[in-house]
Image 1 (tube, one colour):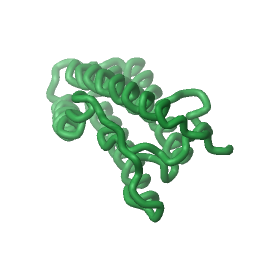
Image 2 (spheres, helix red, strand yellow):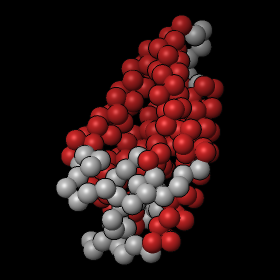
Image 3 (cartoon, one colour):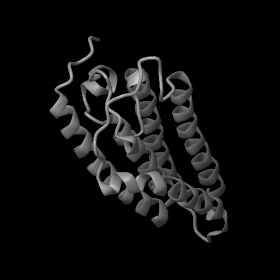
Image 4 (cartoon, one colour):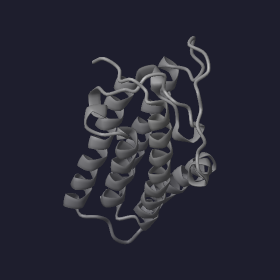
Length: 180
């Protein structure tokens, strides 16, 4: 089961990175509309810029070492974690489609030109954060990994501050919603 966990974890991470790359190719950071207005981000959000790659690398290394561990997760745990992670990938994909050119990574502090309220944004203020937490949470359940669980907690703290910063900036601008 640990080889299956390794393979599914690698596939989930690849899919997540592919979705981010696809979004970046479709809508480059500097599009024809010019630079976006920015807002101040707090220290946890700024730290995310330097922490995201070491955290990701640690998760990948830990997944690679799973087959060497003497115990492996049950198939029920593996299935539940996989369903949670896949639902996160679906939410991430739908969020990117709804955002379109308004997407910017949280550590950049770039505001959209208009507030998006279609797709997952009808139900959640920050579905990309929720999607990433579902992905890492599912991988933690699937692998029974304390390292991935710690990464999930770190992400949750960073996303809490990022969402707070972004909400304040959007309220200050009082951006109009996009028409669906």
